[in-house]
Amino acid sequence: MSDYNPPLQSIRFALDSLAGLPEIAALPGFEEVTSDLVDSILAEAGKIAAEVLAPLNRAGDLKGAELTDVGARTTPGWPEAWATLIEGGWNGLAFSTEFGGMNLPQVLNLAVQEMWHSANMAFALCPMLTQGAANAIALYGSEDQKARYLPRLVSGEWTGTMNLTEAQAGSDLAAVRARALPDGEHFRISGQKIFITYGDHDLTGNIIHLVLARLPDAPPGVKGLSLFIVPKMLPDGTANQVTCVSLEHKLGIHGSPTAVLSFGEAGGAIGELIGERNRGLEYMFAMMNHARLNVGLQGLAIAERAYQQARSYARERKQGRPVGWTGSDVGITAHPDVRRMLMEMKSRIEAMRGLLYEVAAAHDVAHAHPDPQTRAKAQRKVDLLTPVAKGWCTERGIEIASLGIQIHGGMGYIEETGAAQHWRDSRITTIYEGTTGIQANDLVGRKIIRDGAAAVRELIAGIAVDGRALAGGLLEAEGAALAEAAEAAAQAVRTLVECGTTDQRLPYAAAVPFLHLMGNLMGGHALVRGAVAAQAGIANGDDNPWWTMRRGLARFYVTHVLPQTAAQLVAVRDGAAAVFAFDEALM
Image (cartoon, rainbow, N blue to C red):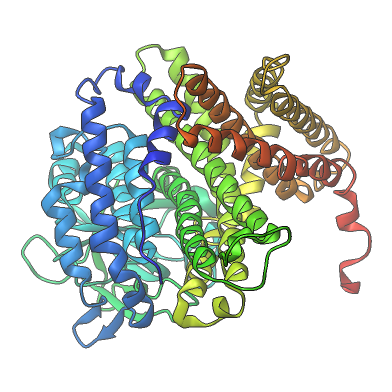
């Protein structure tokens, strides 16, 4: 497996030119976010990624987490790596200084997380989930709960998990059976949860589990779920009734312990209610939406790692004489189709980075901007694009990891090269935190049909304006392609709104093609905006070839990727009914 080199120039470009970090740094609360500070944070985080986390990635794949008589044990080197994060206060980047954090923008935190997931996705899941647990408690916990739990979660002294899934329920949380019985000031939690990432480990002395469970008088379905804090260790130092029954044997991310947890095998694990009764799913969505954006980030991160390895291999591998090549021996990068695959990988990676950073930046605006209307508009954008970011980026991450194997040829199918690990690790991303179908259903059902399509129409109209504004300039072709794709998206939205009035199944049959259409459009918007920034750099006399590369990526994307929106429009407009072309018994 090749080394990981943090793409600091691309990350900084996405932060400044696409996400608008300078404008975010001017918002109240972010006054200390200077350009020098950002450079320092990115450089040091990249160093940790390359020198501490990346060397452990292959070891975690070969010798993953194991369950012993004293609990789950991570790969050798994992606890020391976690200690590095604690010592630097890295887990607290985006949290309030009141609880020991640094109060930095979420978009900067996302950039740091990108590098850590690229370096070692199995490891980076732990800080990701810990931050999510801390967010949920910060939003909905009592002042006493915040005081007791947040400082240690923010510092990384303790880690956090989310406990939703049960064997009989899967993604249907209405079928959750875990119980919570009142017991004085506490509750006794009983039941079993599966697929709990970092549900048990040896990185810290305590794990704070956020658990969905039902009270005795709860109404049926998801409206009867409450959220509880269930620590592994109680305040007096004794173990709570939380048992790691087993660790899952998985296709990838072997270094991450995915636990089956049993609560309350001898009377009930002690837990405490977060917020109000029967509002647990609402509260858990704070953690889930944080995780969904970060899982989308994993799609980007693993794609970047697979691309770097494929590029390195292609530069070194010499095979045959490329068409039209007259010089000395050269790597297979000179073969036109290998070049095409590398361009496909790189352009999609930059498109994903642009989309993800844009959503994270909107989150910062939604929470920090002084104008309430601006905050509300930014929050609508976050809500609309989170399922797109999660679903589209993870699907693309798998495709790019697969292309990485293809560029390696037969050697990519051999485990020793490490190319296959990227694909195996990426494969879970379209499944956990809600499958692509669930993300698409959320996008179409909640964010378009229920909203009357107001937010998505506003977004698409703005993209069309940006495309048409390039008419008559050097990027006219790119702008025209972007405007044409925006029109395809607008037509798709009209279809989704109208077809549901005749058959309510049809919008959902077209939901995934529409999600891909929106992802391709948003990615194209990011790359064209990047090309505009690059053109400005060239116009200012900067002859750095990096600007030419950014323009070339946009040109490739609008000719190879953006035309797919036309086909996706056909799938939405004409293909939904074909899903029900014959009886399911004939399938």
